[in-house]
Amino acid sequence: MNNREKYDEAFIETFDLKQDQLNSSLEYQSINAWDSIGHMALIAELEDVFDIMLEMDDIVDFGSYETGIKTMQKYGVDI
Image 1 (tube, helix red, strand yellow):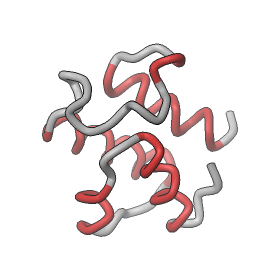
Image 2: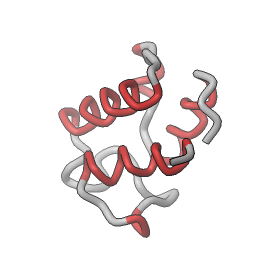
Image 3: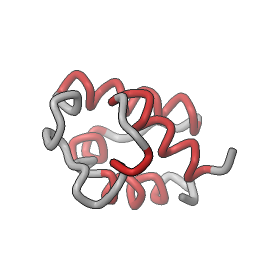
Image 4: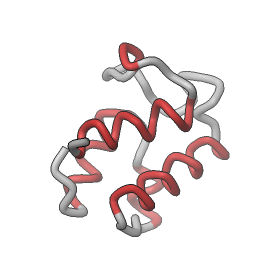
């Protein structure tokens, strides 16, 4: 499984989504599951999968599927 597949799988598993829902319109609170608790669950999953520890500012700024890709690249995860 490549990094993009792992990244997508974190969203799919955390928010019970389908692959075609992963796009630029997927943002924090755009779906019921992506609330503050869901957000932290997603962050925890990504940290586990990629063996990284995101800084608080990056966690707060991680507001969309697309933004998350840029954030992951900051930590050396090529998506």
